[in-house]
Image (cartoon, rainbow over all chains, first blue to last red; front, top):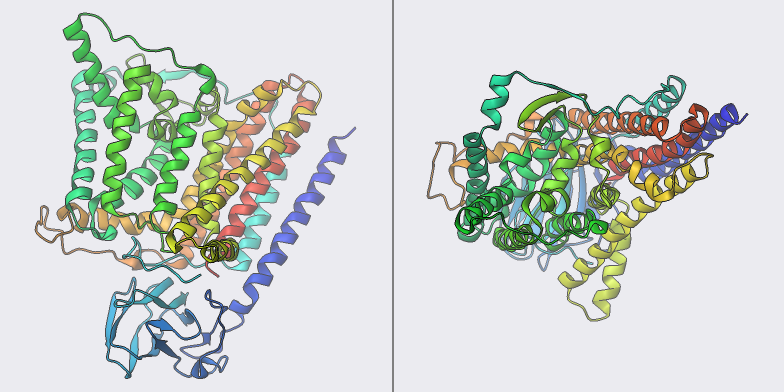
Length: 151
Length: 464
């Protein structure tokens, strides 16, 4: 008896499980994939882990090819860790303004920039490696941005 | 919870999550492969066969002779010594110190993959086994009799190894970084841990005997031996033999608590993958509660991570247990205990697939460091350039995101198929009646599909 019936039942369960996972995935991923925008620096302010909200004024325009600015106050990024998306082969471009002197370090690329207090510093280098990279401050030790370089 | 400051962790990048279309393809292939496996299933066990073909006398002799054994053991002891020395005397930056990359990447990830193809390669190089054997031989020579050992409590089986495995991964991903990426345990801590573990292991070997402890309690022997049981070479009775790939896995899992070792391996990897993704929210929330309750941030992070890691292991155990209990309902099933132990080895390929899926890029990138600056400047103090490669570095361009994705998904799919093959094979051995064997396998199929889809899911949501 059951052989065929069992196979069919199992198939239904498996397909249902796959569909559920797929839906869950789409829900999580949707906001990420739709932010293409065409520009070099499509910026997305994700839900920051620190939670205390507040989008940076310059980073607000979704999909605009404006260069995003990360504002650092008391050694920590305003609005939490900023998520910046770029495409491989283009240029990674963003500004950092810190109220105290610090040093920026982009992991993986090993790009370092001195950040004089109160000055806006433009960071600009080619997006040659794919993956997720952290940008952190050496003095305060805080991560200020996550760079997402997609193929 | 704010992110804790950390020293530079090992690899300064993380993998992009696999795109939705690849997830969908991976899951579809898994399902199609599973149904295909059901329809072409064979009726006689094929991987229970323990025979092997002895290999050419000369080579076998050279590889297994005493001088070779001594040389391999000495290499193992020497490398462990270098790692401990570098950890104690070298820089505290984990990424510039030989100890961390060597112990946690080269050895910990290298031997499972190597073993899965070749067999138990770690055994000859096991530094504790080498020291234990020399100590035993010395004792025999002086006392004129072989050392006597306590009888090992057989019911304990491989529990010491399972617990040790969790402790090792805990040290690596919970105690070390809590909030950082990959490995950020301080080299000093790693070296001290290695010394403590060496003392413990040698004491246990003295109590229960070297080989007995290696089979059951020594974490690295058991763990690497588990993956080595998939490989095709084997040294037995002083001769090297070629065996059918996968065939030794069934024999590996005959000791009690073997299932616990496999489950611990999968569960801890799941935790490592999930805490940057789906578990990031929950761990943060619970961590905040603990901080509010007056705990320090590091202590809170460690407690939360420990709890969630154990939860992940428990969840994996639960899924396996459901599969086992499901199989037990099929007519003609062997007793529960025998079933639980009897299908443990079918999860080894899944455990390996999880390892590859989660650490493939880390391994490829970090091995470049291992063989350039970490080799020439093991202390990371810029005082030595032993092989002229101290100024080398990691070229992150060697792997594109696409390559990493395909390897990750490919590993999960292949691991799934091999797991199914082993489970089906075991069922045909346990159930005399082919129809009942096939029915029992709906349960294992569900378990495997669950694990593989979980793996794909973790890859697709990591860090997003």
